[in-house]
Image (cartoon, rainbow, N blue to C red; front, side, top):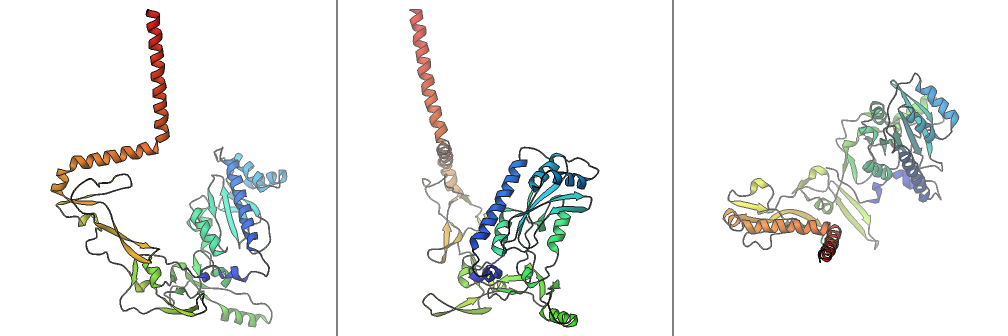
Length: 403
């Protein structure tokens, strides 16, 4: 289970160290420009299906197309139309005032030839000839990278034709501490109060390699070794939460556990407050209250449980009881509340009210269907009425002829 933090320090540290006077709106504009280019590329290829063909030298075709047009999108579409598997890559460096860069990658056997600029540090997205959109971001701001991972598959989980190459690129260890703070697969100890590395003594996979400038080579190497930080898989990063945040996940602090860390911060009225933080192994799932219906196997052999929905209710059925079926966290009261629903009947009562239960289910489904297709039903009623009027007119005409 992952534990999120509400502290402001959860965001990427490098974002708070930007150059003076830099406006965050510029990053947003760059991301919008990148999204627009991806959207434009998908529109260009959505109406045609890619059919791969064998060519003697895809690279030569790429060079010829580049001579015809300097636009990477035009080159990509031309190669795709010719049956060459290619990939259009857009990238943007969010820490510098630069435009969106574009490149075209062409696969030749086990090699990939890239024509253009792809930024290593920033937001990187690609579209291949099959229309598969992939997120290549490794060293971008954490908030942006997290949002991209929600909507696009990452190269660490790539299933495309270049998946082996993509996964190899994602699994390469970060070199600097700045890179290791944002890498999607590896991390170093960040020093954040809400994070810790566990286990810390084992499981590390490498060290950062800081480049020191100036001085003699042997002195620079010594300084680099002294500043090196151990790199751990991201699974070693554990989030610390308060008891209140644990309750939001229907979890509680194990009896007898002391806070793993106590943080002190100033409140809005300038008073110092203490925040008690707990590690994942100090928490446990809250037990269900007595009488709560947890699983179907807990229903007695002489009982029947009727599930209610927004459309099917059993309020008219007499007898039985409404059991507790779970718990949920209330944002208004800050507590975990019981949730009750459905109807638990003894089999004798179920047999007695079986027909009434069937009518309740049927009427609920019919009512839901009628509400969903109200416009269509109204049109059918109008059509039926007009058809009847038309039939009456035809009948009157036939009667007039007969007279």
